[in-house]
Image (tube, rainbow, N blue to C red; front, side):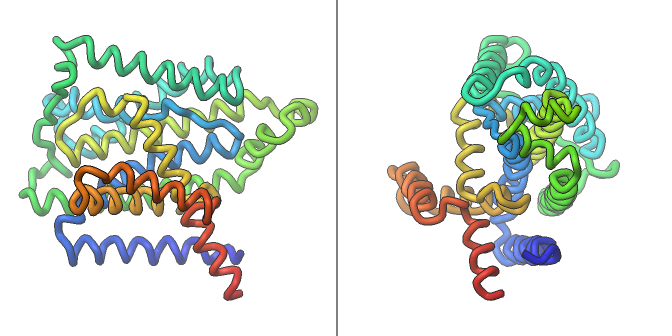
Length: 311
């Protein structure tokens, strides 16, 4: 596929999101949530390139969200809270990554899941600090030193999420095209050969793990700023499963896939819950089953296939 096609599609998708948010104002909230989750899913895509799937990636999303919730009373500036959430997520990703990158396949997945549930238990049990399952309300935040009105703030956070999504997508695209990014595929296929030619596989995977943790923390910080409330459920195993669901739905063939999947997931969930409140989970399951059966490469696979056909 032409190298310019993907950036052009990303530009068209960005314009479409802005148009949808302008035409249907309540969609701003839904699309901001989708962009935040897309960032976290983008991190899982990096690990999947190495043949590893994390079933505990929502741990970093929860860490970013709680960083914002805890620090907002002292540091209400959004442009400072985001870097702080990224910093804490990077440190946590490095410490955890030094342990989990020693393992592969199901052991890698289950260790991440176990650590995620430990973090969930800590958030739930330490009521005096985290307020338990009640969660923490995020205090009002400022943007560039100003506290705008509700409508303006929604637009600003939506724009911030859009900029971070585009920037992260370009970063991941460049990273996967670099020698270190290409080495991730070597971990999936022939890790021993990488070691023979002098490429430390654990170090390559550790870098990708830390980068994925940073994206998860960034997505969690955006979620906290958007919903203004965080709970331990962000670190529950179902939240991690939701991120994997989105990746399967969107497809792992491109950095655009996670955002396509996140937007489709949130829109299907909102409309399904509104139309069939008692069966929206069954509808989501049906959508995932249809994707697995008829479009195993996800929504991005459908788009890429159409483009190849026209070419």
